[in-house]
Structures are given as C-alpha cells and as structure tokens.
Image (cartoon, rainbow, N blue to C red; front, side, top):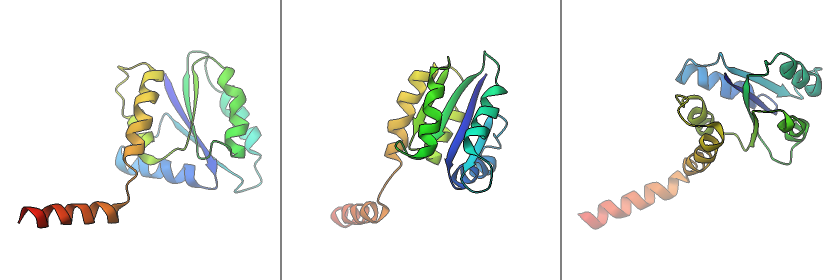
Length: 139
C-alpha cells in the first residue's frame, strides 16, 4: 500500500493534512509530523512511524525544505526499499500524489507531479494584468 508521511517544521504538515481532509476526505494513508512544536523529538517520531510499516508498504515522504533539519533526519530512510523522499511540499503536489488511482509507478508519478505542482505557483497580480491586457486588445 502506498502511504504518505508529511514532515515539516512547525504545523505546516498538519495544515496540509487538514486541507486534504476538507478537499478529499483522504487522510487514512497520511501521517504527519509537526517538528519542533512541542517536547517530542522528531527523530523518535520518525523512527516510530517507520517501525510500524510493513515491508510491503511503499512510502512517499514529503518535507518542506531540502536543506532543512527535518529533511536531513529523513534522508537515511531512502535506503529502505519503496521509500521516496520529496522536498518542497505544497498542497498541489500532495493532491496530485494522493489522488493518483495507482496506475502509474511511484517514481514516474513523482516525476510528473513535481513540475505540475510548480506550475500551480503563480503570481496572480501578473496573471490579472495579462488577462486584462488580452481583453483590452480584443475589444
């Protein structure tokens, strides 16, 4: 089974999980670690998560910053079979990964989802100006 671990600084991970609950209702396969918000040691939380997995479980780990401490704690787990680590998480990326019907192998899915998520990052002011200019040119 494909599972997801979202681990971030602060409560970003829980925020993404909350948004998923609202948009898709899908949170059964999603575990979050909000690092450095309480007395829990993220290293221990991560180890507990991986100890509970079956050998058949495939895991996509999503972190916030590639050079951040949370990502660094998780790098050692990429040695585990069927474990994928992706940094720079945003809601568009998580939705693309979670809503996949399972028809695509995970590596291909991730490679496709990352550029699609990047395309969702827009400077809306610029888009509004562009659309306005296009409408003015039309009329």
